[in-house]
Image (cartoon, rainbow, N blue to C red):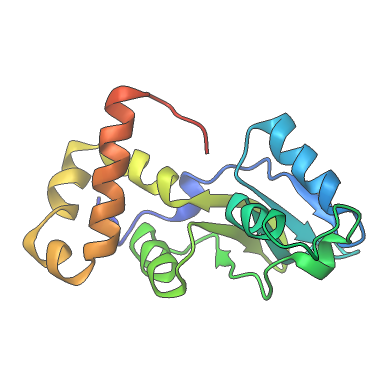
Length: 167
């Protein structure tokens, strides 16, 4: 067992909170607040992910005098949304997140969204397995994937002080 062989589908969250492209930014913020989550995937009329709005996006938007909470999600979402296949490995997911500077990957199968995985989900899965911890945190990881290692370290510390923290 290694991060190269474990598919993200084994750790993903299956119930993804979504909003339609025509729903308002206010609705998206309310979904995040009500569900204590850090992002909402925006879906087209076929239910396929077309964009994403994260807490960071909300902060940026609130700071802009041009932002209206009545704006359609489609007009403010990040697009194109980076997605992952159900069989993508934990390692490939982390590499994708690092290269795209993102923390969440909606998971799709045959064009339909079936889940979402976050960097914290992956870190949590690694920490649950001593075998994964020792195989993941080696010298090559420290050098090659330093930003990921730093995020993992931050996550480990936060789990010590606030176990099972929010997304």
